[in-house]
Amino acid sequence: MKLLIILGIFSISVQSQVNLLNCDSLIYEVPRVSLFVEFMPALIGGLDSLQSRLIYPKHAKEINIEGKVYVWVMIDSTGNQFCATVIKSLGYGCDEEALRLVTSSKFEPGILRQKSYTMPISIPVVFSLNDN
Image (tube, rainbow, N blue to C red; front, side, top):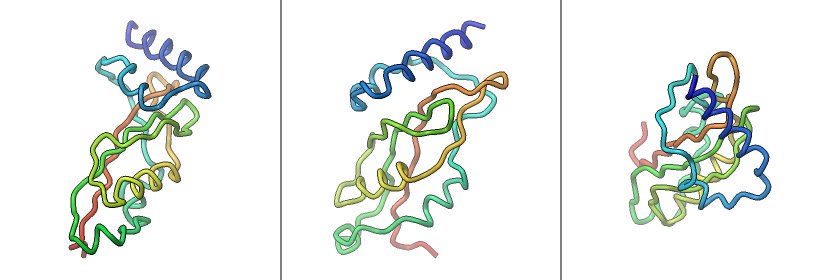
């Protein structure tokens, strides 16, 4: 019950301040609690659909940059995303491409006891030159 109350309070406070948020500082303000939910927020179509839309940055391709960019994003109770920011960077245009992919994606909200809540998730975007 305490978790439900914490999530509810967090959800209400974040949703009421969406237009006032500084997304970079929000990462450090999110309560560090373990979330046990029935369904975490999820990309509609999954990571494969996100990866299939990836456009490899020209400069990164020229100098053989590979790896993962992690994007932290808040998903509200209706499945809309806001406050996307890179938390692990590759540079060379990869960060911008990862943000473009995440911010243009659709999400399903996180669900606890048949009610949706605002929750953060981290999404890995893989940059690999040897994709088959």
